[in-house]
Image (spheres, rainbow, N blue to C red):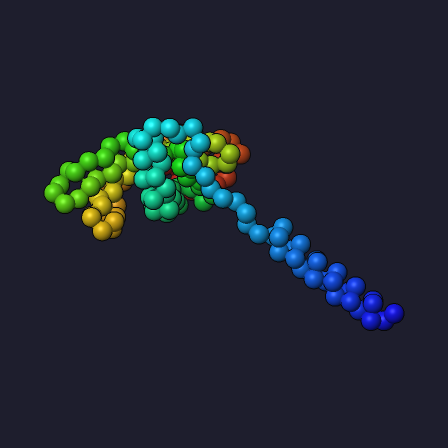
Amino acid sequence: MKKCRFITACLLILLAFLLFNIFNRNSTIETFNADAATKEEITDELVIALFIEDITNVVTNFYSEYYSGEIAVYDYEIEIVDIGKKEPGFISVKFGVTPQVGAHNPLGYDELVYRVDSSGNKELAGYEHLKTYEVPEKFQKYMIKPIE
């Protein structure tokens, strides 16, 4: 009888451990836009995906002087404004970025220019803040100073 209780208790502990691990996993998988159909749309998505971490870091760093709350940079709020070979041996990519606060409240519009070599090394070559949006009242408490 004691052996049966011990085995049952062990099985319940094992089950609890497995359930905890299954439901505690970060199972969010980012996906591309299912509606992108043309080669250009797919290529743009791929380029944005390869740059989004750098773009997010640079944009967050820029706005940290003005805003202390959480800033989101969504891939669908980034566009490729221009791409080309501006100088021999390098590709230049200009992104238009609209960072968000809260659900979908634009904070500003910025253009970032990256210079990429043939090994895939990328370097931020320019950052220009072009437009400032009014921050909703509920997010005003996070404003440090007006965005210039």
